[in-house]
Length: 327
Image 1: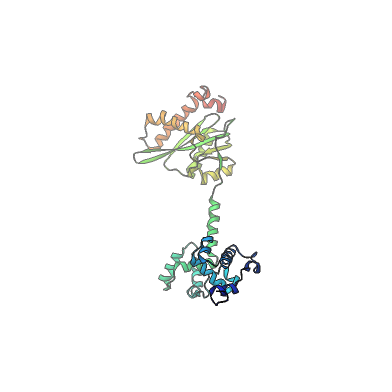
Image 2 (image 1 turned 60 degrees about the horizontal axis):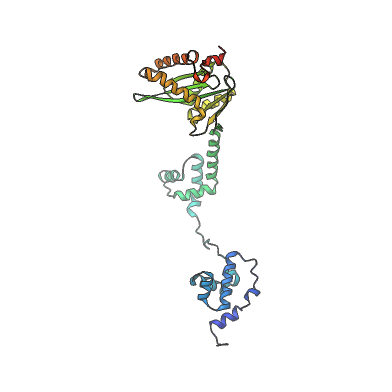
């Protein structure tokens, strides 16, 4: 009944139907504007169920924001900060802050767990790793250590020049391909370093007991002396033996180093072919049941035949030495 005291009369007087014309909603955030719209809709239609269906909200959501609107007006429709009013003061953190920082500075690689264990064992201080992490983060000792690690990693990282189709060669020494073949025998492995001059097919190979960048450097120096001409570019795969000291040496003497793309054996097809030829024409016949010194003597005898005596179909039945030295 009109004029009778009740919910409808109270809401009508408190929030008139023209509420949208009274309140400027242009500056409201999106969420607050949605809440204002369903409250306005309710005040117009006076039906909570219809309002909830129309806006796809639950009755609980409606009552929550409607109650806030009644108590605080338009300000009640804003999201409230989730931070508690009374935050717990980090007493333990502040008490041992200097201890934690001192340990971190003395042992910069220690993790928060190591620091927590050290404090407990050596000083009788029981503090959680998460608290130690927060102390280190506040003191900017987490990011500094990460930055240092990144700097060290960047220093060690090699910027690789790559080639997809392989480099072309128009004279001896312009491009030399190098690769390593593993030769397992009776529980041990020999490593055959092999090089081929792409233009002339002149080759060189040697066995080692280990595979490392130092061995690759040693092999390159012996190979360069054997070839007797200047080498401009070297092409290898991405093995670790072709990084480190090997790559450093090439940079020092001004030889360009190119790497093949991963899983691209055809890029180094020439050296792959000569490795297979050595295997078929030497090791399958002679075997590997000798000391490494004797194996290298056999390998050098074969290399001499390969370069100076054996005709090569790919060279029009010429010998590599013919192209390399004009013999």
